[in-house]
Length: 101
Image 1 (cartoon, rainbow, N blue to C red):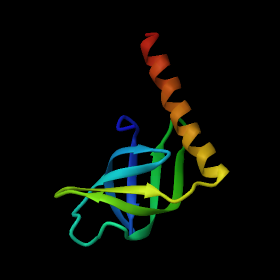
Image 2: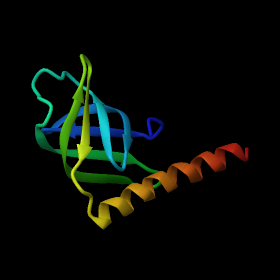
Image 3: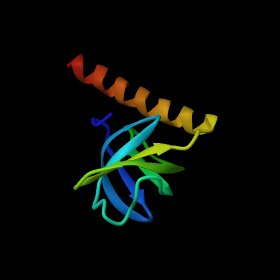
């Protein structure tokens, strides 16, 4: 979901989110300080139509390249799955409304 307005925070530092799904995320970042298998807290902030939504959860580094790091979320509780679905639904509503103009 690279189309969403989202920023990620890894160890308290902001990183642009290149792509995300309910399974994980990929951020633009220097991959040197992390290793595949590292587990850390990640936070995602989404800009929705009428609010900002924060999601904090643990994730594991599963891939890294020169300019990005990919994380897999640890199993998600129901409330975070519901929040992710609300973000997806908000985007779909905005896309549909924009297509009607």
